[in-house]
Structures are given as structure tokens and as C-alpha cells.
Image 1 (tube, one colour):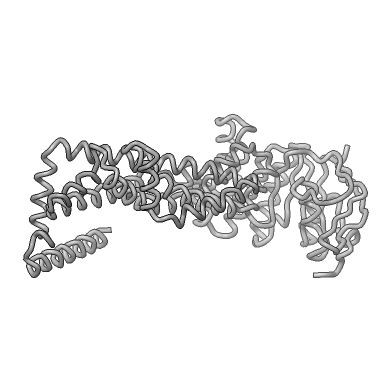
Image 2: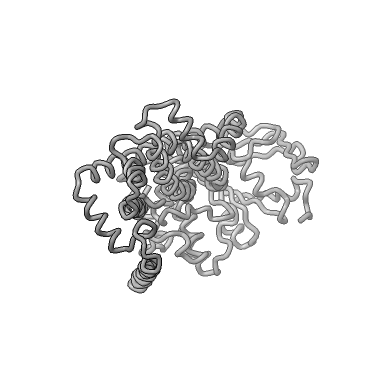
Length: 245
Length: 205
């Protein structure tokens, strides 16, 4: 464990050094601000209330998008696993959504919704096929032999669902969640850049480009990376394992 | 009173396994199914349990639900030993009674100290005993066991057989087991049914 922390630290330091060296070589903060310049820009923006409001609202959009996609994806997958017609019906839709460029989704959402709903919608649409496909795959691979145990012993359906089906598909849902966590931050911020809701990380990114403030662009990007990683690590800690159900 | 199997025909594709067979199994009896492998012992257990419904004919008087010790242990890999057992008691016993029952049966099958372990952390014989505990403590009127003592050395088999006898003696459970070993069959069952003689697959692997 300690060794792992040490190696992580070492590799972070290595990439920081690469960053520092390249910024020294390029010697143009407009193209490549150094880690120190980025850190100082980050401290500057972090001192403003707007920074925290932006973080909060973007976080809220990511959470809302993920939650809606998760609920929809899981419910649709359960329905499709019981009613084959639903699976056939959904399959072209899911396939189309999966190959639709993020930007097309965002552009369409810009036409349809208010600026604040665009990031949430984009996130839902991007994550939905992932939750759906993974959950459906999990439901397909639930061990029939274990379900037979429940059936033979007369265990009620809801207990079988909670005790067999849910623990069986949990790894699939976690896989989907870890894919979607990355997706969600990227899609929400991209949509925010274009829809520019008042409080958002995306809007701030957009503003840094307007003013050619590259250190701040790095600072905001770093913020997004840090929060996204923190959320992923935090979720891993709090999510239940199969034996806790 | 008995479990009555009437005019049972079971096919696998074009292969007819049972062709219009009938048999009776008395309530409260211990019956052994024997015969070469592939003759349909497990299939007949599955039909009696209600897991296999793809047949023609009638099964009357088979109690529901059943306790089933499958040929494979079929433990839930994400549950500890005690949760594996407790799971089949959900909705049948109160939480308190279930916990007491689980505690007692774990002691009976000599798994004390292992109740919190996952199946993967147990040896093959211990997994078998956990599956056995699950089937033994379930309060149904019909207990089905598919090669229950397979893989046990003789001492352990004897211990588990004594446990089985002590648990069964106080109940009116109907027991059907699949077994090959003559000494187990002689000791446990009053009725032996040679499935081979009923099956079209006698002598086939």
C-alpha cells in the first residue's frame, strides 16, 4: 500500500517535471504556462465566490445527468430483459446514440433547451447507452443455477432480485459508472462551453479563451481533473460491495 | 399419502429419456435413486422439484417449496457462509429464528469459525457442507439430495450421515437422494429405485 502511494507520487512528480521543463523550453506562458504559473492562477480564481459557485453548479449538472442516465438505463435494461420486444425497439436508438458525435448532441440540445439544461441532457444521452448495455449484459449473465436455488427453496422474487440479481449485475453497473464518470465531466463541460450557463466551469473555460488567458485555462482544467478524480475515488469508497446487500 | 408420478414422458430433442413411467414415493420415506450416469436421476429430481417443467404426464402431491442439495454446491459467491444459509430462510422464518437456525446448523456441519467466510475461502469439502447446511435447515417437507456425500472421506461422510439421520428422525420429511455407494444407500434409505430400469438411457454415458 505504502509502496503504491510512493510510486504514484513519483510518477506525478515525473510528469510535473516534464511539464515544467517543456514550459521552460517553450518559454511562452500563452502557449504553455508552467506548473507554478498555473498554481498561482488557480489560487487567484479559487479566491473568488464565482469559482466555487461554478464548481458547485457544474458538479450538480454532472450528478443530475449521471443519476438520470443511471435510472433510465437500469430501468430500460430490466424492461428489455423481460420483454424482448423492448430490446429490439431500443436497439437502433441505442446504436444511433452511441455513434452520435458529442457535438451533434450538444448542438441539438442548444436548439431544444435552456442553457442550463443543455449540459444535463448531453450527459444523459451520452451515458444512457453505457448504463443500458452494461446492465442488460449483466442481467443476461446472471447465473441460472443460482436463480434455480431461489426458485426451488421458495425464496420470494423480491429477495431473489436483491440477493442474486443485484449482486450479479453490480460489477457491470460499476464498470458503466466508471466509464460514465469520465464521460459525464467531459460532456457537461463541453456543453457548458457552448451553452454558457452563468455559473459553470465550461463558461469560465470559454472566457479564458476569449481573453487568451492560458494559465487560467490550465487552472480551470486542473480543477475539473481534480474534482472528477476525487468524485471517482469517493464513489469507490462509499459504493456497497455484493456482500453488504 | 405419496408423491405420485404418472405417465411421465421426458424427451431431450428426439431422445426419449423416460417413456410413460409411473412411480410412487411415500411421504416420510427416504428413497434412493440409483443407476448409471446419464440414466436420468438428476433429471427426475429436477422434475419432482418443479425446476424442470418440460415433460408430459402428471406429478401429484410433490410438496412445495423443496430443499435441494444440488450436485454442484451452488453457493452465492458474494455471500458469507451464514448469509448463504440465511438467504433460503428469508420470508419463511423471523429474523431472530433464522439467525438461531443458521447458528445451530453451522455448528452441526462443523463450520463454526467459518461463518463469515466467502465460499471461495473454503475448501471443497467445506463448501459442500455449507450447501448441505442450507438444504438441511430449510423447513420444507421434501428434501432432494443429488450425490450429497460425494467427495467426503469416509469419516466425514459418516459424520454427515449421522447428522442427517438426527435431523431427519424428528421430522416427517420426505427425502429423495441420488447415490452410487451401496453402503450409503443401505444405511439411509428404505426404498431404492433403480432409475436405469425406468430409463431408455440405461448403460449410456
